[in-house]
Amino acid sequence: MDGTSRAPRLLAVAVAGVTALSISTIASSSPASIAKGGPSLAQLIKKSKSEKGLVVYGNPPGRNWSALADKFQAKYPWIKTTEYDLEDNTIFSKYGAEAAQGSRTADLLIASAPNLWIYAHRKGYAANYVPAGLKNFPSFVRALQGIYVMSPDPAVIFWNKLLLGSTRPNSVTSIANDSSKYNSVTGYTVDNTFGYTALYGYVQLKGWAALQKIGKRLKAQTGVAGQRTLVSQGGAKVAILSSPTIRLNIETDPNLGKILDWSYIKDGEPLVPRGIAITKKASSPASAKLFLNFIYSKQGQQAMCEAGFTAFMKGFKPSGGCKNTLDAVYKAVGKKNVYLVRPVTKFINARPKFAARWHGIFG
Image (tube, rainbow, N blue to C red; front, side, top):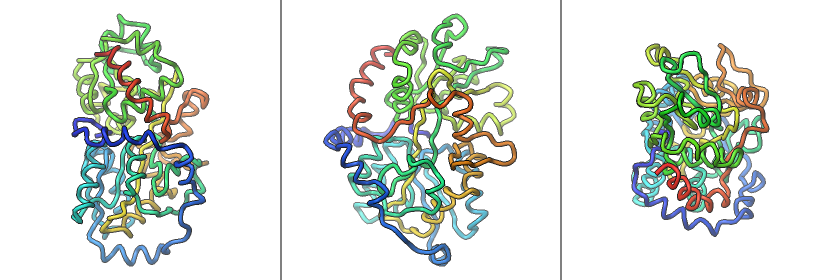
């Protein structure tokens, strides 16, 4: 669901209390404080064979998750993977309630919500495990202790090419400045966790001017599925600052591919970190560790790329023509035009004022 926000606001209230968390607290979760060593691959495989499958509470849409999980299961065919496609708020509240009750709960959490990951860090939800291969990734892969960036997701623009013809919008500014061509626009509401993160990142680069020009043309949606439906049916011509998971839908659905196309955002490209962590109450911890090790391997990065996530291993060159990489983002928009949103208190503390301004513009 990429962080759709129809869930109860329990965690939104809890996260407001994270303002006391300082940068020094986050720094204490640096790589130096993470436990070293761990079971060997052979030991993990042996133990995983006695476990009863991998349960994931995550926000990846079903098509994207299945494409990735199928590659993992091909490598470890005895590990059955079950993903519950949940809103970001629900991912953490559901795990917290079940863990407290001692019920069977998630082995892995996946969410695009830096603010909620800080909350999860403070609550001790993540197991202290370091997957193999992290040295081959940018340092930002280590978000917090036991919490890692699974995919640095670039927000994208996608549009109805039947309505726009040969026009290929690739910036929010160009969409803002042409109200006749782009008279109907969609995108996330700020109340969505992916939406807030992408909007925040864009504003850090470009300010509010373009968003203010779009104003009431925006038909805000709670998730990428709603945006896809609106644009493909002509209810909006273009979606801004949307989830890159749409790439897989366009590439693999022939009917959708005839209608939609997409682009990175050249005037200001926010990266929304999709986080991942093994839970402390995991019933299948060995299977979960194998999954993380898979993600941060070359084979896993190829699978990530093909599933519509963003491969970001340093020097990684995907095969088969796949282009969903961080290097491709940098090449398309220029590194100076990219802003990675990090789990820090500045980002959390900005939300009330930021959301109020967004609602003031868009209603």
